[in-house]
Length: 131
Image 1: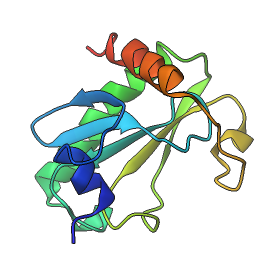
Image 2: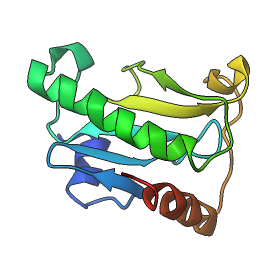
Image 3: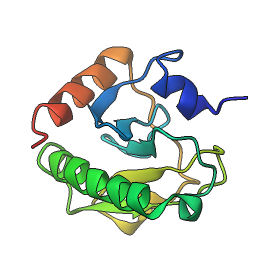
């Protein structure tokens, strides 16, 4: 059975897309810790990040770097936190989280509740500054 991320990649489930490359996809987390919380996934379904082929692993992190610059230029924050947990979805992925305080990356925090229009606006803002 395909992971939820594979279904998003295939277009079976909608997402708030930020950017896409041949091998990677960036989209907003629908249960964000903070505004601009973005997921970076390889299009190839691999469960564990460190099981990715070297070339795809490097591509994923270079893609994440590019997206992180766009987030930083759009969402007021001190830094972009990079978090890899890897247990919540059986598909390798990276969380990019705008960070102003250490507590911003606490996954026990209540998630933001945003409306569709807010997600669309955030995605549009971030994607408009991708280099």
